[in-house]
Image (cartoon, rainbow, N blue to C red; front, side):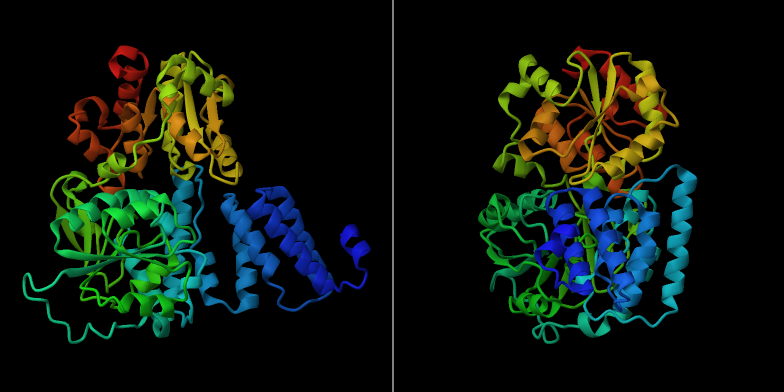
Length: 529
């Protein structure tokens, strides 16, 4: 502040409040300095309040988002609510009302937040909301609900109805060719299929799509359009364009009307939305009618709840018992396994060859504080997938294997979520066991790939398990122990291991069996070779 005032003493209180706010964004989002970002936002708020600047919502919203991303949900909510009131933003009000934590302390804590979530859904069903730009919301309200491992299809459908009613003017769109559409006679022309996603770059979603696009292109029966909504185009984007022989359209974070117009101009027969629920643009687009047939896929392993999505596509290898009841869409189960493995043929897993040597493993472990002679049981999933029940699993593994270390991975741009998990685990683990926890910092792409070579066993998260992480481990030759659930989100690793004929060795039937299978591998290097 002194430097700013010394530079130009004519700065008004409003200028100073904006400067602090912009400084907070810079040091938080660009430099990853969360404490400095928090301090700058608080200085912005104090300056605005002292000068009685009306409706200065910027720093309230940004500080709320900083707290949210750092797992400080209880602190985030009132700040987001204050900003929403100043902005008269019903979308932000709904988002704050349905905000869920990254980390739960125990099962009771999760139930508390689920009750709050359900109560607020009922409250907002009674309200007359107006959300004219749904694509600009901070996220899809129910995104983190999927990580609970419950069948929440009914409440997800209720949220979709709230959103459709609130954003009716924006999302009510029908492509001009749809009302008079007639299916083309067989063989008369190629079937026009469009894929719309924020993640048509190097991402788990694009890895999932590559094999499907390759198959469609090789039939010669389809004309493929790829609409990429993310900011960057990279080698992953080019792989998809090449294997699908596709028309690639880059629309970074477009207005919904522009996106609707661009997609409708392709006169699609089929619209595919690979990960509805992860991105507000795709979620809003899904509420229109861009093609006669519209379907969602398992890039986000949850029903969309949206009545204009006709089908949800899964694979026989992931199929759940009583699966249809988990979806509001009609479920289509394709034979076989996910086409994900083709990505690894097109883009071999980039773990360096030296990571298959003792010297390479030791060097990596030294860099990241892992004992060279330890048995590394790693859960390399996003850390908010680490369920409270995992704490007991970790304790039993550490008790059962004196050489064991448990390896977890921090979220990008923050270590505070990992700290919350550590604080929770201290209630179950002894101080000696806590010393055998290793937290990897955010890794470069190369270090992430190399990390698998330094691990001995991969512990699949539950109830929301892995998919691409499991394929990464398989590619690196690391065994994966999994505990499947009844939902597809907890069955992808099961499908991959069953395909490889490893179900008996690596698929657990209970938490105790999960621990037993992990320890059996951990204590016997020959068994996991």
